[in-house]
Length: 208
Image (cartoon, rainbow, N blue to C red; front, side):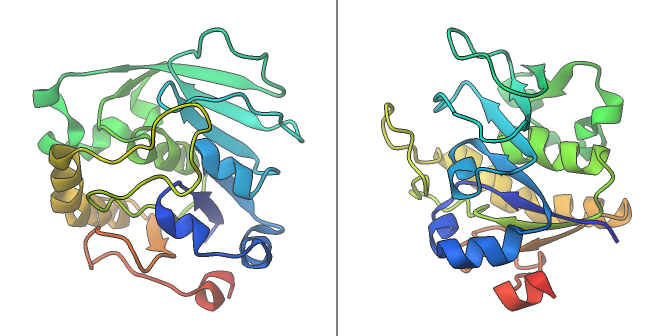
């Protein structure tokens, strides 16, 4: 089973010290969502969108994957790949639970609206790259939770209620779909509101 680490930006990303982040990520393939990159600047993949976008001074030739092309921002180092997200509220994948539609192999330059960058882009990208075991930090989705690593020039973000409810209520279905497709996700978090069906692991278990 090919393992990768996903760093997202829920509050539990700040529960790990720099030493613990290093223990988790060193020598691993790492996907970072938005400002979570600041916890591990040498991540191989960076997933962003226009929400809470900031400039990044990449220290390595990271592959940047963006939902829609950011405007008036720096030229990114490394490979820059962008997608267009489409969909309406009634078509949200969290509502329809048509999980197959999220696979990048089923999309050509477009992504269905989930919403949420984790399920729209980051996990599909990791699957597309051939990873089958994903250790995820910071996918907390608690109502009222703020980003662990804030964007310096935008207000603090909290998830809206309908999105929180839809994601929590559909998370067991999503997990079972992943398992059916040979993908195992595990949460390194004590704060996640997602289904208890998704395994929680400790740092020691994650690096074993």
